[in-house]
Length: 402
Image (cartoon, rainbow, N blue to C red):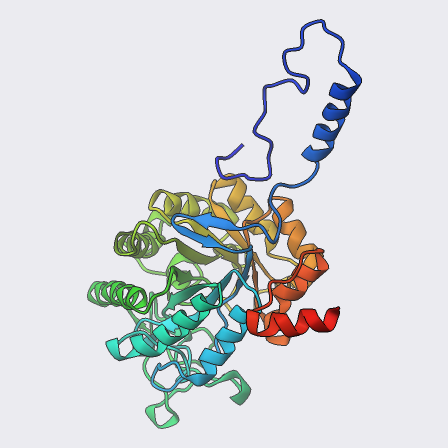
């Protein structure tokens, strides 16, 4: 039993009747015993249970996944982002994570990506963090670099590669000269100097995120972006100390994770999002993920946000309800670290079962929160809990219900 497993009973090794000798149990004792055994079947932790990581308490186990909105200009958060993210905080979530936020201008997926590569980005982000926290949710931010998948158009414009400055594009970098799509620009292989500059950019971004008031920082190492590109043998063909062996391919992520953990105050949690598998033979896989997550735990990472795929365009992914939760459970069990489950989680009962069954410690919800900003409040109602409406709404809603 792991030290963090809140769903297990702590009385292992003690008989259910205690030390009663040869005395006969009274009917009252038997009644108490039966009730106790029944209570053992009731999970101590469910979807609405608070979760405390270091000095931060999430009011429930529901988190908003970082989702790119492609609506920033020069990296600046704007009113759209405030309303978009603030609405989900009002909607009762425990954690609201700002979308993949680029640590360099060249690290954006698209020209519309959020950014945190200069000090001027801090205050617009701070406005969001302040409002989210005022509504009772924890404000988090995901720090990212798109690597070879940078310089693309917005998805509603086709999402294709922006190949020239005239199109609004820029040069892309990666661990090796291997484009994502065959007709994409070939990324410039990163020199050791480029790597050091990228590490410095992540460190500066983390400091800015803290100055903006975020209470959780997540490092993006999934979905085929730069960190994942170094991890996967499919995108990393280097022959230096950052390629080849598992130790070499994980070197960049572990270096950045260590540096960020040193920067982030000890009372604030630090998450890492990974793709647990590339879904392709010879790629990144679960066994490597478990080894990596053990190392990340030793560095002080508090939770692994477990996703999958994204490093190559033609992987055959068996997308279905909760298809990635199995990975979160394996990492939780075998790496002995808290995890977040994500992937087509849409209904309350299933989300609750993920937590009560010990498969993950947080449930990350994405597109379903685009459809329903008040998903968490409705989940409270579905679980027969009085919804914690904001006071500005609650007095009217509850009065109508009467």
